[in-house]
Length: 128
Image (tube, rainbow, N blue to C red; front, side, top):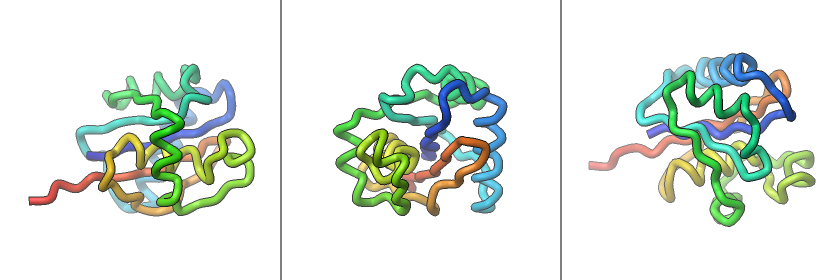
């Protein structure tokens, strides 16, 4: 399972968000895994660009709770002063990805930032 956490400037177009997701995946040398979740925090819940990007990727759109993101914040890899000033989280995108992917998920690397979009990728691997 893959969860992609997104933070962005207000009014960011879905095409821009999709382009940044593609950049982030290419940077890590991976493709999209299914099931796929696109996650964000409550502060970005009304961003239509994120919802539309999730829809185009045939992904489930999830708004993670502040409580769930605070619970995983210690596992984020990035500390952004901007994110912290708005959300109280070191990285909204990384915390959203981790919270959406599940308690044993891991980030595959630090968030990727481009064109006003922060994109973090977390995976939950099946353990047999």
